[in-house]
Length: 283
Image 1 (tube, rainbow, N blue to C red):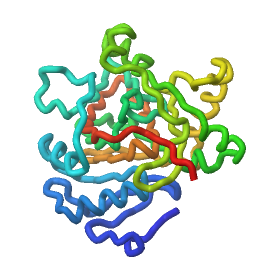
Image 2 (image 1 turned 180 degrees about the vertical axis):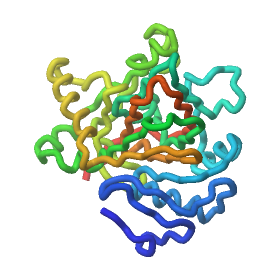
Image 3 (image 1 turned 90 degrees about the horizontal axis):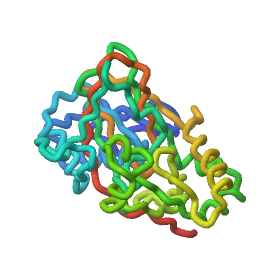
């Protein structure tokens, strides 16, 4: 549903929805020196649209980090080199020697005990065409399920495992990774801590299985739930340009980085805001 700026109370920017379901560009916001009022309104827009976008932002790494820190503590990703300046920055770079690997629907770091609140991604170098990012509203994905299935899912817990993706990428075996990041149990249906909405909280990248369910049945049920993110009516698609920034609510939506630009270069930098432990609240 689209909302007017007057209804939302936005004074620092104009919100232009990208789709009826999810996403809005915030026109006129300046992230180089954000005011307290701008931060408050960006957070309100994030809760309303799940992902918000900014154009023509000429900011430094330090300003990128400072903007993210205004929304909470920052986390360090294990894929960040230990000797990197600004460890809060996760650099995601692909080109002729490295095809993009983020082309699957997922929520970030659900293998953490407390997965992230959100991520702020900045375009550094872009291909001439391609490399868009898609976002899917997982509240709608849950709300459109059959009520009987909703009721069943609300009683289920899933196990999330970092090794599903990062064992190979970090060149570590499962045991090594699990010493630092043991598999975590999260509800299949999560309650958003700020909006109170319920949403599907499983993703093909990190969810391994559903507890207490036969593995074959678990795999089949998860495959169906994963497929919900791919429904176009739940999505928006963002075309990057120099100076573009995306800020998504990792608790509410999933995203997919299209890897259609190989062998062209695409370089992005991400700063991630720490979140809290997922929970399900019964009505």
